[in-house]
Amino acid sequence: MNKKYQFGDVEVEVPEFDFKKIFPAFFFAIVILLVYLSVYSVKADEQGVLLRLGKYNSIASPGLHFKVPIIDEVYKVKTSKQFVEEFGFRTIEAGKKTRFSNTYEGESWTLTNDLSVAEVKWQVQYIISNPKDYKFNVKNVESTIRDISESVMRKIVGSKLFDKVIKEGRQLISQEAKALMQQKLDVLETGITIKMVQLQSVVPPSIVMDAYNQVARALQNMEKMINQAERDSSLKLTEARGEALKIRNQALGYQYRTVQKADGETQKFLKIYDSYLLDKKVFITTKMIETMTEIYLNTNQLNFVDPSIGAVPLLGLNQSMGSGFENFIKEKNKAR
Image 1 (cartoon, one colour):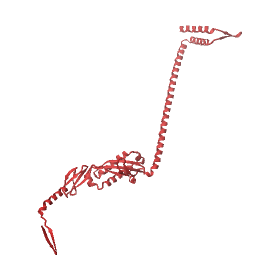
Image 2: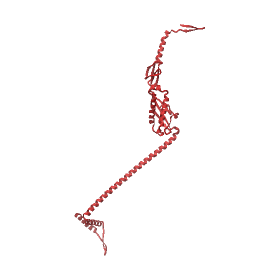
Image 3: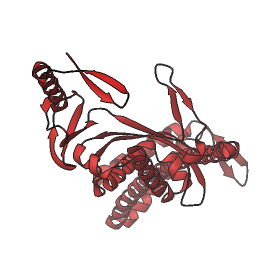
Image 4: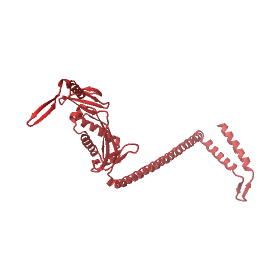
């Protein structure tokens, strides 16, 4: 049934609604809308921060939850995902053959303690461990991570000499940077946890790489020559010590033999001297006979000299006289 309305010369016919007929459908629609606005779900890799009238209320774990429409608001945070920020390079395509872009070298140049420039490329991996702190204290997470990371890395590299930065090792610098970054993030109550700081490369800038390589090669050659000289010196020193030990042992052997020989000669002399003291005349006579005997035994011919006739050879006397002298000596020794 329609109801007519007159507006001047115009008559408008408006359908007449029966509110009692449409109320159930309207009520059902309102209920569906309230249920839709009251129910929310949190995924397995998320946590929900429930705000009531703009203030923190609670943390919602993964699953199905209810909230008060209009009054409550839910802010979902990826707490299981690991986020990555790269410095000095960008990953274009990850996979077996990962591709990188190196057009960001300027942001990785860092001044060392000896005023040299090192190109430090690194990667920061982090997660959101406290959704509440993250929601209320972090406005731009990428900017926060990049500012703190660059500040920390420049501080660490700036405290070391260039050679130390290049040669000290990536792991040591990474560990120091991770600890200092986490300390700063905790002070700011960001709710962010640094999982890893990974140095991709620590090298001189490309514009001075050739000069650095030449210096490095020169230093390597110098070190090689020094090591070779030290090895040669050690070898010669070892040989000299061996030769000195050999000479010393020879000298000790000669000393021992000389002392033993001198002791033997001394004992022999003392025995002869004791014989001399026992009977001087007999000792002198005995020695004279022993000497003459030795002479006769070693002589094949004796010449008897007579002034009137000259030298007359005496044949065969050595055997007879020698045996006589020997018998005489034996008798003397028995008497003694």
